Length: 252
Image 1 (cartoon, rainbow, N blue to C red):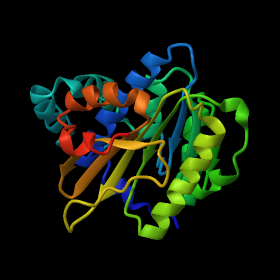
Image 2 (image 1 turned 30 degrees about the vertical axis):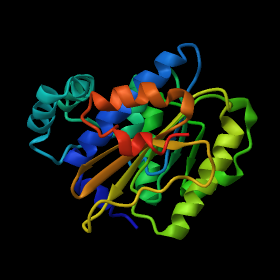
Image 3 (image 1 turned 60 degrees about the horizontal axis):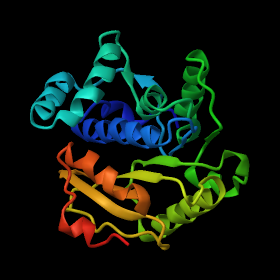
Image 4 (image 1 turned 180 degrees about the vertical axis):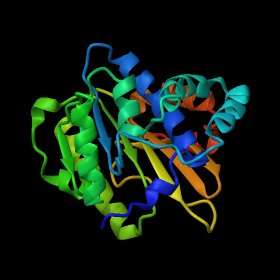
């Protein structure tokens, strides 16, 4: 399996919304934990950097930034690299925004994963784990990495069985590397041509939905622990996300 369809979607509007939230929420969780290494989990890491296939990227982000100032930091980080012919993907944005994060990365495409490993090495970036599938994190038991956790669940076209499998992995990961007293945030991505997905709550009471946004066919939600829910909603509000009554009603 050499071809990765993600190559045709680099820098599209779904990417922009997702990556702007990634940058702002990463700044939030690191700012709340200034002297702590954040655990970063990415279920579909793709590459560290890639050519941008959206020729309208700059214009798309600038239009959003005129309405929502929260897009400006993402634009400033990405634009400087695009001018050099490189588009920073999610793991690279996490590295640029977080302070020496512990990277837990998954990428199913074997060729893409090998290229990602090479790119990380060339950039001098160390990772804690680079796996074929997010389910491979089920057996991760190194409690020395216990602390705040920030994750990107992407792509998210999962059936009910896969959803439960995902939360099994996340629950295991949280139980292993997350201090219950510290922060946890997850950006969840969904691609749907049949309308807004029914966002489900995880099968435990640790995480809750704190914001949602749609730009069909792209739908995103953010899940957070209770202690960071309010600050996360303030950040998402600055990006034009819905953090209103529907989301608040689901908070513990």
